[in-house]
Length: 176
Image 1 (spheres, rainbow, N blue to C red):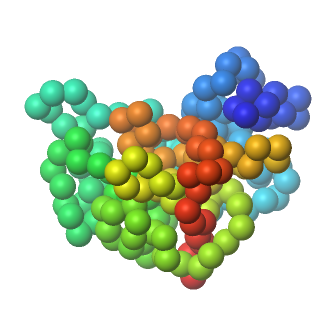
Image 2: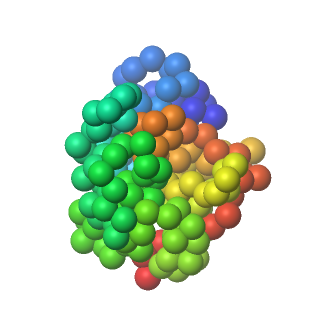
């Protein structure tokens, strides 16, 4: 899915990197430029989230101050980067864009936030995972498989883009 998206962005002249299946900062910059060129709305929270790509946990007793800052956007106010932080990241990005979040560190808090929406760049998407839920931002939906490319926090212990299968999908929302 990512290779297909990178190939499309490259053929349109927006992506200059390797077509390698890693949707990192260069791929995201190409996606934003592509959407801008089509005059498709790019929510401010997506520009904020994209700027955070690569932020990751610090192994051991130290904690990444930026991840702790994400937690400050929630009522939990966790002080460690080992505390699940996907919802804290979404809340932080929305709040930085002056959009009221759930202000909760629980991914499930986004199941009924805002209004229900169909797949669209920037929507908040909740997925199931073993033991709970995960939340992030919709980047792309594969037309064939319906799988989603999601920009989120605490995905492999960092802010990155990962593919989530449609079978795990629970809810997609936009601000009310």
